[in-house]
Length: 210
Image (cartoon, rainbow, N blue to C red; front, side, top):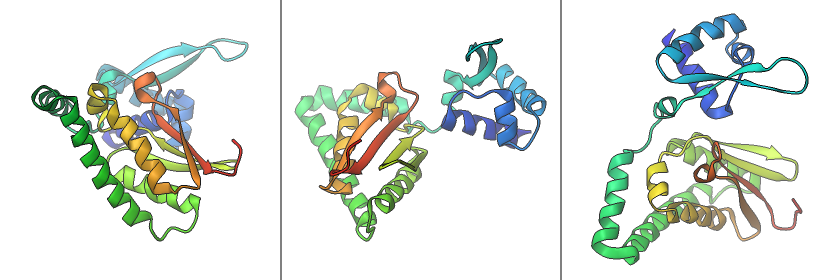
């Protein structure tokens, strides 16, 4: 029971709202079986249901994570992170905070470059970057989309830091552009801090038109 409930939370975190039938299909069980697990998650305050109208006919019941449900995923010590950022800003000013972010950017860039150095094409580089980001807690994956690659991150383990200082997000976008190569364009298409469900990036060769 516990394993199935955890899998439901993972599916909702990665894919967004789903019906009981869709969850049942993903879990190789009936929609009614998935609904029993959902009822328990609702009682635990981890999931909530809502009605959605799609075309004609009656509304369909969908299920999504609550705020408490999202908190089940790693947050990289959110309160401590936010406090430390506030302390750095208070003691050393914005310049000190910028130096801290620049040092983090340098360390990440060097690590990513070392891991991607032998990847020969864009798809391999994006897939390797997604694997690195997943190990860091971002629940990242790479997908092909016509002439581009998508880097999708379903979780942000530094959300508290990014909320306190959005330069952390701008820093990461800059890192992606540096490590993926000068012949590549990187565009953020979804942004968690602007109401998105996740962060996502569209990545393509500079000569290709999106």
